[in-house]
Amino acid sequence: MRTTTVTIATLALGVFGIITTEMGIVGVLPQVADRLHVGTSTAGLLVGAFALVIAVSGPFMTLFASRIDRRTVLASAILLFAVSNAVYALTTRFDVMLAFRILPAVVHPVFFSVALTTAARLVPAADATRATTRVFAGVTAGFALGVPLTAYLAEHPSLEAAFWFGAVINLIAFLGILRFLPTMPVERRLSYGAQVGVLRGGRMWLSILSVVFVFAAMFSVYGYFAEFLDEVTGMDGSWVGALLMVFGLVMILGNFAFGALLRRDPIRTALAFPALCLAVYVLLYAVGPHTAPMLVAIPIWGAVHSGGLIVGQYWLGRDARDAPEFGNSLFISFSNLGITAGTTIGGWLLSVTGPRQLAWLGAGFALAALACMTLRLSLDRVRPGAAAQLPV
Figure (tube, helix red, strand yellow):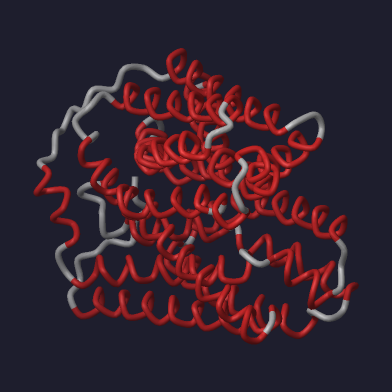
């Protein structure tokens, strides 16, 4: 049991390292632009290209890797992240850095999907959700600690140190996977057709659409966290940095709380998530211009926001139980599509109306998610057969 706990913690560390690599660059983009001698908008391709490659390549790469030993897949993917961070620290060429943003993005969804499935396989079926919750804790820790630490190290002592930090974290995870994870050959080899077959039928596509709307709801507002606090609440940069840390730390606790709620009552918890998002965004709109109420609202926002990952993975996983890794890759791809849609539409609305109205955009996406989830459940009542058990 202790070895299993350490193995799951190692997988969570790998997820932490991946999120730090993916999102940490957001906080150091101006320094990266200066180092590479390009404009900030050009440097922004390092962020956008990463997300786009994840969204496009995820299911295909997971299919490709579906017949390879699980430890080999996980170790190879995380090693590529370690190498890429080392390249970021050493290169001064934009084309080289862009190439080493694209390469790890290709294996990003593979690591996630295999890590989640592997964590569930390592424990009894009743503990599968608890195991995946612990892996997801690496995501929230990445936002809470990895991203701020990257920004801090870029200033004290240097941008290179920030990237070496990412390289070391991913290297430790690589060594941990080799040390603690046993060889895991694929015992039941699903054909590519059988895996892609989960996409047949309206139930899966309603679940996919639900995930897209859930993540659009989350990131259409969170993506402009700093602008909201600056322009609506009137907080300066030091306040924004501190509250980002608070938001992330609350997310860690909220992640485990939502995991516990899913184990007790998965359907009601899943349906409650978009409803809670809607309530939070109404609250943000109401108290946005007032500092003291916002200091109370932000931890509430963080606690609700934290549930999107595990709720989304559960919801889509219900319809992908016959091909869980492929289902997890669909979750990673379409959640990234939701993030892209939410931040893109949010950016447009921000330029037209200002940041306060973003709360209504997030509320609209949350309502759309709730409608899709309710319609998805109605199909179970019409044509029973989709069990409400947690995916593994």
